[in-house]
Length: 287
Image 1 (cartoon, rainbow, N blue to C red):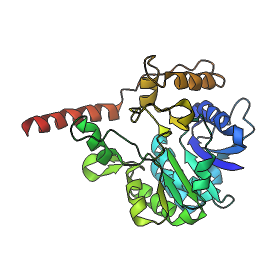
Image 2 (image 1 turned 180 degrees about the vertical axis):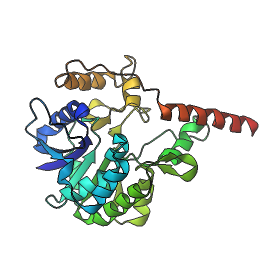
Image 3 (image 1 turned 45 degrees about the vertical axis):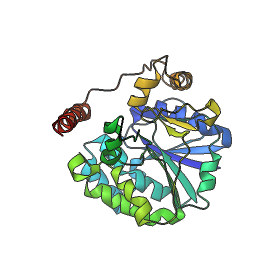
């Protein structure tokens, strides 16, 4: 039996249920930390275990909840290490995944990696050419080398998780000039501060709109991270991965009949990134 976990609000449970369906082939459970107080409605998949937020009563969790209770996104991100620490009391290996991830092929090798590694990370694999798409090259340093939508750990990773939780309590902010990007940028230090950290270079793991510049066979795609950016790219019929996108949308609609994919939202981060890009273009022009 394999153990995955994620964090969600009630409004996004349908994504969690689709995720649970994608991992059921190999008798895997999905633990969902539900951060709002509503009771789940409808039929809960058999391989889903709901964890109400009030079941995590340790001091650090309570501190994080107090600090980020008014921002559900930050609260979800900040609670990842605490959820993993709680599950390690009963499980020897656990993999955290964002609730907008979906598996397409055999993932059991990920847990086999955790037999010889304490932590496994997936790089963003942003384009990195200094000749073309230089803005993407620099994004590696602004946003982080590794994607925090996936993290595999075993019992020996407790020290790293406790350090990560302290970092999240210290600051959860998107601030390029300070070298911060919520919970994610801290992962850059994992391979330096801790031992037995595996950087997973399998391009079919955490495939997304930001690293789809490689054409994999369908059997090579292990899981896709269907973030809003990925949705906006893969829903285009000319996109190489459009058939996998359609498979995901079909599964989402079995749990949310009225679901309609949205375009990448125009929010404060979108505006900030647009301003940053213009400033970056100006700086390059002046050089």
